[in-house]
Image 1: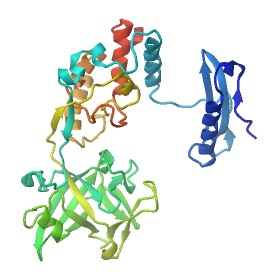
Image 2: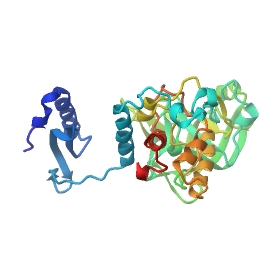
Image 3: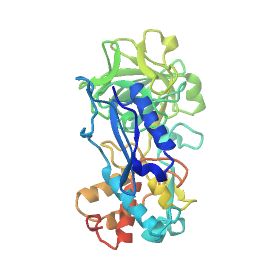
Image 4: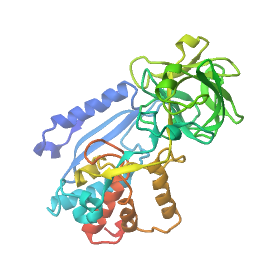
Length: 387
């Protein structure tokens, strides 16, 4: 039986209640199967003030977490850089709400040309979208957004088909490999083969939706006539903004979406009943980007909380946005050893538009890498290795 969390002697200067509440919350997550187990140690002035060990380190064998359990952790340089930066705050050299541009230069400020993405190339058939550009063709990158839940068809790395997330990303992207459209009774039915980010074709196997076929698999996309007229699609063709059902040609089954309360409970399945088939809005990536001047400055607090507007553009195996396309060119220069230092990389990164307006939304990305350059400058070193 696990012992309760322990407040250590060094905790007398702190209110221990928030620490105990943290441990209780973590224990609830283990009890609800959100975590297998954990080891927790909170320190203050280099002394432990709370320790707690709970749950299992090996689920299959039922082995509990103990004081010697080792956990594999990722992104630990983020924690190290953050602590290093906070020491400069403690010394009074900077404050959390100072502008990053005070250390990294004017290029990181709105006055110096910092920009934010206004349109990242994703076309949904809106009235301002170029109608000719909206037209779908072979080779296009597209997304399918369920009009009822607002979530996209999603393929996880194992190939499993799901319907999750409103924000289209790499797992939601499909490449049109072939398409043939015919006008039928004021509608533009289209036969299409589509490939997921895994390199495999969308298919139905044993009643389950997956990207599992190395051979092309044909789907019939049947749009609603009303949406075709509304978005001005070309006669006999499907465009971004078309609302379609997807029918698997070999089995005759339709894609359907069920939702039982949360994002995780929304799932993709098949049905023989065309009346309950899901309706998906087709979105297309045009790779054309427009940007506007940033309104807000980036503060150090924004970097620490991943609200700077920077994301991980360019990191994925498959580019899915116009910003991704630009960022991959920067990534190629790093991998080609044309940019060898954080100083050089951050100078080039500042020339790319931000994904979001600074301070408006959490967006996991390059923020802590940029903070690493800040630490280099504050520490008077050319490399983090010597800070």
